[in-house]
Length: 142
Image 1 (cartoon, rainbow, N blue to C red):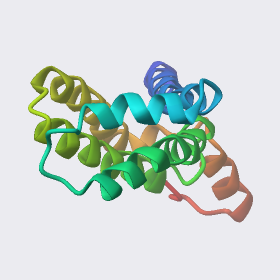
Image 2: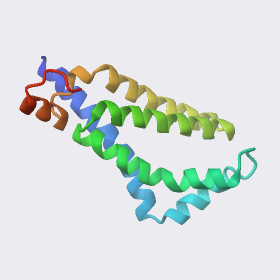
Image 3: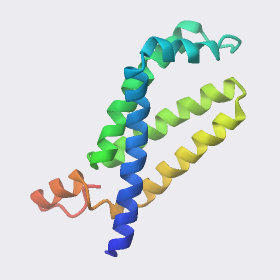
Image 4: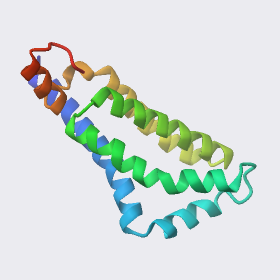
């Protein structure tokens, strides 16, 4: 396996996972109520139930931490990336309901990165997944 491809994949995986992880950490450390009120204001005129929107907004930072960390570590990478993709679809739905198309464009970039990472899972050899597979003698844990 070409070391450059493995290195590029690892850098992208770690950077993407760290970005998602830090989104959550920053929102939690910066004050979840401050973050939530700011985002709830953007949904004031969106035809979605306020309580449901509030529940999702308050859950997002915790979800970002929980699904960003395994991507950084390369742990359950396929499932963590699929969870990130699902979260991004929630973001795209909410941002689309707000008709904030520039925000959707940004989320599509993140979705593209997830797609690249899923496509390149065979390069995920600098990871806890690969370490565990080698210990089990398994050839494809990714």
